[in-house]
Image (cartoon, rainbow, N blue to C red):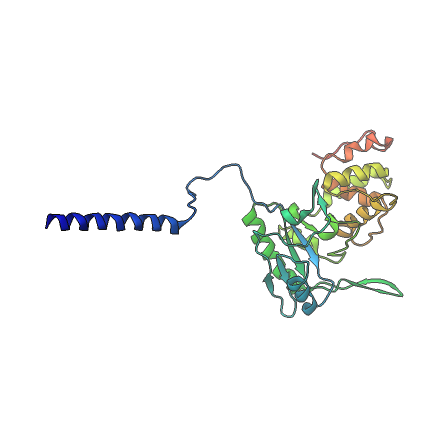
Amino acid sequence: MSGRLSCLLRGLSGLLLLGMLLTGCGRGLVIDTSLSARGQDSRVQYVILHYTSSDSARAINTLTLGEVSSHYLIDVNPPTIYRLVDENRRAWHAGDSSWQGRTWLNASSIGIEIVHPGYRDTPQGRQWYPWDQDQIDKLIPLLQDILQRHGLPPERVIGHSDIAPQRKLDPGPLFPWQQLAEAGVAIWPEPARVTHYQQLLAGQTPPLAWFEMALGRFGYSLARQPGQTDATRNVIAAFQMRFRPARYDGQPDAETAAILAALVPGSFAEIGRFTHLAEPVNDLP
């Protein structure tokens, strides 16, 4: 009787050991997540706004079946927010791009495409289509949510034309950047600061080298292709399209300089490095 019991116990022990081994194999890789590093932040550093330059059907087809994509698409009639790519994954929306020294921004940004036809060229000139306010009403809370979750300030919301001024125009001069700024999801120059710098400039335009310095400090890339002569003009036009949409011819002028100075602290005082124009000047604190 004791021999049978001993044999039975050995059998049970073997089965128990086998079960433990099988359980361990079934669990696979085990990672302990009870610790967390202090030094980290979101991979998302920017939110980039685009228009589709097409209707809804074509935009959906392109962004879901083509070689380009975005994290979100805001449709029209009715305005609907679609999430096409998880925020933890990279969408292919920015292309060859640069902002604040970072390049190829697909890996560090969230892309939002908004269904919008863009513009049409006519014998009377280029005509831009107005924006649908219902789409903007969808965009603003989406941006508020994204910025809050990723801990981003409003200046990290930028346009496609900001990050690729040599080849892109979207979201265009009619896009309501000031409305976004009033909602806390973009930036806009303080009117008092702009007026202050306009008075100091007294209608005089700083040299082009100052514009290049200040635009670069703001975030733009002034890289140019070999032989290209209009790179700086394209960057100035992108800046004007966003902050002075009434005229975006790419020509440096005193009003553009005042707006730029209002957005780039300390830049106005450096005009003296390029010309006698700013001797003496007092920058705002």
